Image (tube, helix red, strand yellow):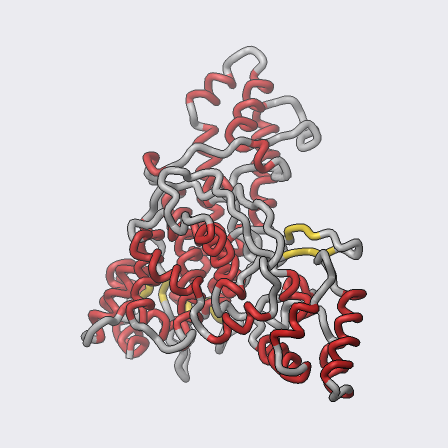
Length: 484
């Protein structure tokens, strides 16, 4: 059962007037976005962290739970140079006289750059020895782009997070140079990730780690600074994301994973891919653990098959386990609606004069549905509730219901390898991240497996399986082989 003491008041409806319903958001927040990849979740989190760092509020918001306003950088000069600038390489390839190359390129940018005022890139000429050096550096920085194959539009492409100079928000730029926030890549899941870290019991310990990452005292961040004017460009206020809980065990576990990776002091930027993986895994666990709380179910577990040459019982159990977890969020929705239906307010409204109007007002108060155009059925409470349930589940299946599958596949937990059905089959990258986050000393193997079970609910061997599974589902030989 969800702990009522950690639930925050709902934000005013006017703050999210474009939402036609407030049910998934009431349970998990505004909002989990299944189309956002693990890397883009991480970059969005850094964008908010960078803005809060500039405002001297990094991970330190006290009891100001909502709204969390911030001003992300846009860095449109940098983005034009890196991703809206094919002419650069053509000029560099045919004009070996630096002065004339600069002149031609600056004239072209004055005509073709988007979203910046003024369209003046002349500040660059004094910062580089030659136009050829400038073009070579642009090529190297472009090669570091994150998710480069999936993000075709130049204003939605992102450079590797070398430091604060590489951090900016997702934008749409119109033909008239109008700039607006875009939700194709930054769908707010990264904002939820930041708030989870900020509300963890380890937030104060995370501040030095994140400050160091944002300061970016490395040559790559310095080179990115060369590409941008002073100041780097405009910022605009963003915010109004909503995380419904003051605290949660999943927040603390996520922060502990970040701190464990930081303690390793891995060289260069080697820690970042592991943080990306563990962060999105943390969001997946948050979704399912909150769902189990709302649905009055036991904490979720994950039977993990280590793919071998032959199919074993572990695969069958894992497949069934995956399907059960996939339905957990829907169970949470059912329970939320059932709680309203069984409430004394609803029962009182049913027996009162004008029952339909009063029941409609109750649904509107809790779930912000229906508007006048949302419901055209019979003016009876039963018909109203049935239509609300239908629309709620249809909406859920388009968004939050897909998070478990999408995030699970992205971080390497969920797979179809060797079969045509999804189940939990962690890949090497995920296993490595889990080892780095959990093994800080010489550790006996079964102790490590037990730790994975206790912290994340991950089951590999027979001993951990005995904690969650029925006796008839435990083939000790198969699970021991799986663990080996």
